[in-house]
Length: 272
Image (cartoon, rainbow, N blue to C red; front, side, top):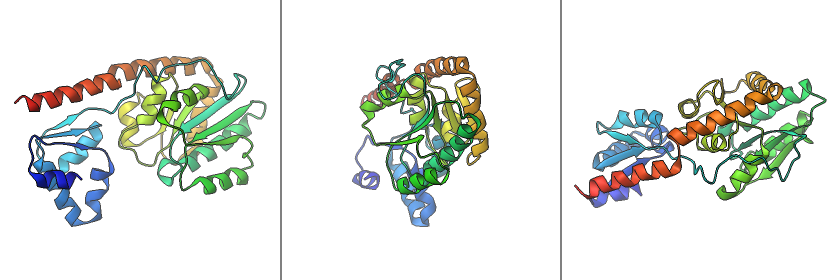
């Protein structure tokens, strides 16, 4: 559809890059790279949801790229002390991601196994919210590690239901093997949840290390387990990091502010 837009020669023409269109598409074939360059050069304005994606896009065009994040609605995503699924006696480690290899859910399950072995007296649960092609494999992994009674495959939920799910989670973990922008992490921080995330570009951009959570090397599930263990042992740190996370989101990733930025950009080009 971007190519079709470029071929119409309609102006003003605003193009937004989102991720795989610049990280994967141009590497699949030299023709794809030509198409991407053509589309970018046809645009009057190019926008990107993250700085790292802007840097990648800049490889294919000399035009300026406006960075406008796709943030979280901080009125919808906010802290809640009410739990409807679990009790406050349980410690819930959770994530909201598609169950596919890209998002490293297997790494999270292996890390959770280490944590449960270290804390046999604690009532720990791993909440996996989402669906996807790896569900059966992940179910089998949980059985193999003998933690299937502690791992909850909740299924997919609508975005408006995500804040209710995040209210159940004490520690949010996102271990993507690649990520251009961490929307799920931003939403968790908006709900005052401490976050643990893999060391990929999209997460490094939105997470202040040791202030709102921890960034650990991807695939390194013992390191993930150590980070979870620390937050389990220091509940006051979970509260502190959660509060700092929300402040960070309000300052940089509030959806209404991001929307205003985009509207102003449209007004700027329309009124030229």
